Length: 289
Image (cartoon, rainbow, N blue to C red; front, side, top):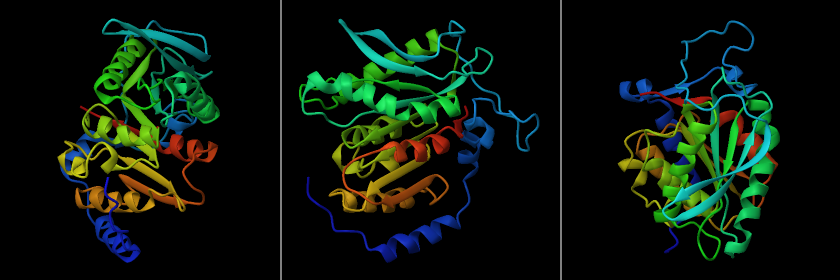
């Protein structure tokens, strides 16, 4: 892939200021909801009794009801193959409080033998933040022979996972989000923007459009799906991420509203700080019919 020119910082800031002055289109306001902070404390939208703002009605799945909390693994049939994925159910999960879901997509591992470990490591990294927020974590392993994602296969896998989750747990189908790192972030752009009515929001760490979704993906999306994008200041993909900011702004996303972009210290890596940044932001978004 050809390396684009680095986006000038002055252009980023000027476009961000212009974008920040724009208001949501009426259709966007009807489809996307920013929930009270209590939605990210224990899974309860009104944990303190009364909160201001519009009443939110979750879209609860008809799951089996109360389940044990903690780390779990489940299997789904994809074609003729039985595939395993990993789950974390928060301690405060209750059948009368449909839980939001966060799907975690790991980076390429170099070998198919290590994808299960990568998926579980990512789930474990996010567990503390997810438990506090009442979020169910889902971590599928990629199917590629080199430990990477094969969208034609893995997107079907992810859909089968969501069907299985809805049957096994009581989840809020209006609060499904995605987080991906590196290759997982690349495909997260394509997965979410190509299914804009399905996911409430998503976040990437070192995930860029050119690697899979394509530079026109934001303008082709049917909805401005809220995005949090983070990247290390010494990451080789920094220029790509900066150019992506301009593409999202030009397609209608608004800086520090539907688009949160941060350059942080470090290179091509992720840590618990990324989980702490992503979860409180992601779990406050809902997509309405």
